[in-house]
Amino acid sequence: MIAIIDYKAGNLSSVERALKKLGYGCRITQRREEILSCERIIFPGVGAAGKAMSDLKRLGLDEVLRYEFNAGKPILGICLGAQIILERSRENEAGCLGLIKGNVELFPQPLFSEEKDRLKIPHMGWNSVNLRKEHPVLEGIAPEDEFYFVHAYYTLPASDKYVFGTTCHGMEFASVIGHKNLIAVQFHPEKSGKAGLRLLENFCIWDGRHAE
Amino acid sequence: MLSKRIIPCLDVRDGKTTKGIKFQGNIDIGDPVEMARFYYNEGADEIVFYDITASSDRRDIMIDVVRRVAEEIFIPFSVGGGIRTIEDMRRVLLAGAEKVSVNTAAVQNPEIIADGARAFGSQCIVLGMDVKKVEVSRKIPSGYEIVINGGRTYTGLDALEWAKKAESMGAGEICLNSIDADGTRQGYEMALTPLISENVNIPVIASGGAGNIDHIYDVLTKGKADAALVASMVHHGTHTIRQIKEALHAQGVKVRMWW
Image (cartoon, rainbow over all chains, first blue to last red; front, side, top):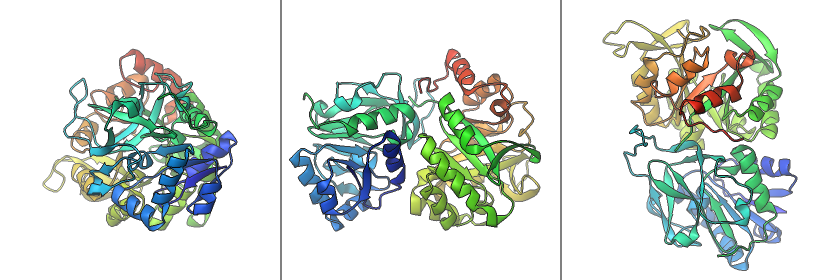
């Protein structure tokens, strides 16, 4: 059973539907005991970092996530859930969970494409991921695969060792980061067609280990 | 680098898809869930549904369509038509749509954009703009005016000013439909599209007028559109999404080629 953490940060049903399509049981929950009893955790989220962190704290879920991270349970962060695992976000100057060292920054403006067109912020639409390191959750993902992104802030981990994939939007940023049993993607795998479903399925069978 | 998106548009009435020519003489062409699955497998980057059901007591049919589509396809899709309140938005989003688009309701009550963005996030809120070319005047300095009711009612809103205002209120994307070009298959409105796209910082989907692949190429390059809406071109089977993408790719436009 997979716990999809519910802290009122966006619509979680698309993640649930994707897992159902893949044949994995899951429940959308904010109950501590239920989360602790699940084998793995998906930590999604859209919205602002400040509000998300205050909701997590109010529900006591920040402590649950830290506990589960330290206990070695496989965790997948998605979108905002990939940002607030770092130490601090420029968005609302929010103090975050600190499971990975580093910060979340706002895209600088203006940004330009190689053709010198001004790029829009948020970074929204399909983009590719340059795979930097192997990871069980990225198995079978090809360099040509693209994923659906929607974000105005990007993750800046303190060390390259946390970076598994990068994406280019006028600048290169970390789009897949991880540490130990935690892996996190800036894009929405549940909205990224077959490549996204493949990544979710990889997570559903991942034991939380990989070569660091 | 972001890919340019190719987005099939399905008009849905009473749970069935149609495609109107200049908003008149709509004919039924199929089941929306079936068509969504078809386009998903063909490489569509997103799908747009417009609910043109006339009677409001039949709108639940659309919610059921949205729910069934969400179980089948795993790319973003948006729903527009008949969205008048935050509650309408909530129902569509909870049923599984990634985005909702507002058009007439936003003209009549612009606050719905801000309220929707606050409740669900800007990325969920698409402003649909139906635009007609008019004489340049003090009131309409861009020479493009917002129209509603399928193009029958002029609103007195300048298209460029409306686009900027909607962006400042929290719209996350603009779907820009030229009523003059819609259904003509003579190409997208190539003056209007860059005018809007280069003056806002949110993505612009060009809509209305696609008849061949050159039209799509033009609007995604010279036209500065971030995405192109296609309807009759693909519904009638004269082109497939794959053909369109292969041709664009061969001409150097970045599009998603693996799916």
